Length: 192
Image 1: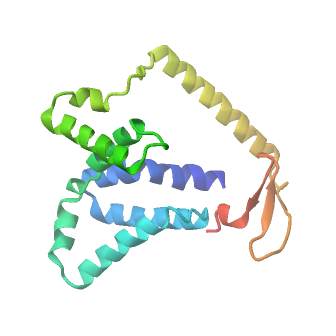
Image 2: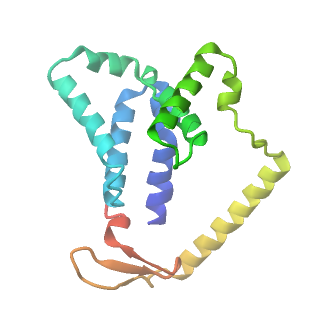
Image 3: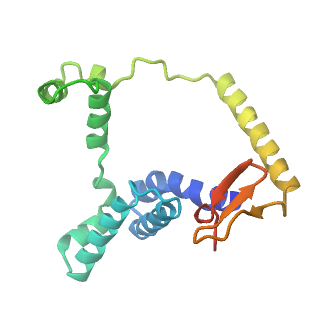
């Protein structure tokens, strides 16, 4: 499970956008989307597993029917970026509350949009007021802390080799992982 997590899942989630998408490597990005969908299926993330399928369905449909958007997407992948939508949504969410009614939400969206388009307070719309600077000393401390945590975790895993027990034999069996002191579903474990 740890090997799968460290060798497959974490690099995939870090690389799919930062390297594959932004570099325009369409074949690798498409493979990454398939792998992300498999990861969501395995972890039963039903709220997330539909978007990759929709994207894959569209791409395969466009390719099958020789639609021009397929070539445009393959040759210009980094242009298809939802950063602006996500950025607006993030700014919008930080400036509204759950108790706002529909009219208040619409008005707030118009205000944010006007501020952006008029460049009156563009910076203020997007900059977080919190201090996000982290000193080099703090980063060094965090690096050492993470290293010690991983070392102790791998030490526990090493000392518990062979101690994993199957709890039940249902359709989806559960296992105890003594290193983590948890019970997990078989779908979480790598089965390759």
